[in-house]
Length: 392
Image (cartoon, rainbow, N blue to C red):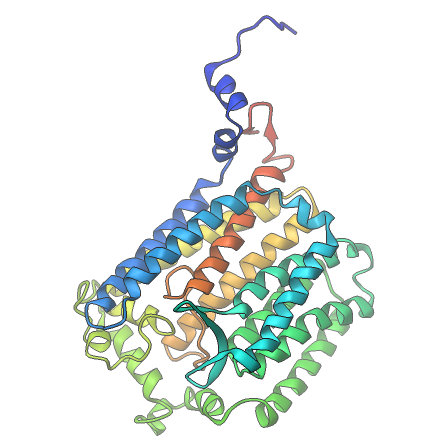
């Protein structure tokens, strides 16, 4: 080996600037797709702000800046610390569980749901941040027990981690977030490996819990939402109103849309909650089918890059974290678009990276930052970083 050979200026530059070297290893496809989705959200909120007294656009800009800072900070953070310090994870889990319980004492009720703390004029939703902790805790739990995942007790213990916050969220009552928390557990369990008889057992248990929740947990308006989606026209002025207006907005966009700021359903206040629960319908009306295809293509890029990172991760913990992140984004996307098009009941789930809401946006960007941390530190053979940090 010739030790006297000159070192290229690019390699010398990266050796003296570790942060820039780290950024060079980024999955920029993932980062750019997330950035474009946030831009779409800002454009939609700017349009909605023109016909609303509430400053959706201005507030969301602040949350975008905070979320981007969190994204790069967590991406630079070594995810392996989370794998090594169980006490830290347990502490965050306990604190967030206490916060969920404290909502019933000092939380603010909005549209019949107690999910937010209002601090200095901003709403903070602890249920959103619980998604991050659950993904990491469950990934750590199953990665250490992947050899004996077939044992039923591991499924029960992991289920308890989800059941405690899940029940607190369901009693708020926030059915949408409770479904996402359960979906995190189900997604990680499926990727970890599970016996079919155990899966069948939990499906039966889930059905029993759903029946119990229907009669003893869900509020009457939530029951109406579930039943009305089957035939919203049976009560078009009340329980079916939201679904009908959303479907009208989606259909009226046509191929190219009505144009930014020209959506009649959202700007004339026919469409309820166009900045959050029904932002997909508001977007589809203004941007049309072509805009929807572009939006879905960006989500497709996100899933492609997450799948690539998870497939090439060098350890089970990293792989399960990425699968959990993918499950959260997929469930949000599926439920939100489903309820905006009348295919699923209305549950109040936001569109990832697009809907208005600081807690939701911050959570999604933090999860993507964690995926970037894994991408820069955990790629194995076939996508391994070698020598100067470039992909093999």
